[in-house]
Image (cartoon, rainbow, N blue to C red):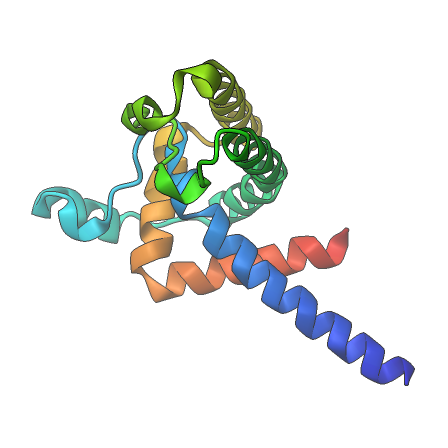
Length: 169
């Protein structure tokens, strides 16, 4: 029974980490400092430069540490915003909440817009600080996010580092 529990717990942890990594480096997380742009939308010279730029093991570790720390803030901000929007019968899926693009905030009723903006601003500031504390710039973090989304090798390296870091906790 214990080995089945341990096996199921480990499988659940792996699934959670995969979801975490996917959630962390997409959607809300492409919001730190600069928009996370899909590689295909970048000019060819930037695509080539990014493809040729090596992401060091240290940067992978820094990225994974930042992503794990940011996820705590992201979950909290998401829940707070979702709860506020529910008070005005609005679903969070109706807006695109990003640090770099607050245009959708105009869709939020004025009675709660200020609260939503404050939560988003706090999240964005916290995320930026976490990234810098991990030793990356926002620009580099977003470059690695882009690589994570387009390069299977980078994706796998980040997944492995997230698993390693989670196992160490």
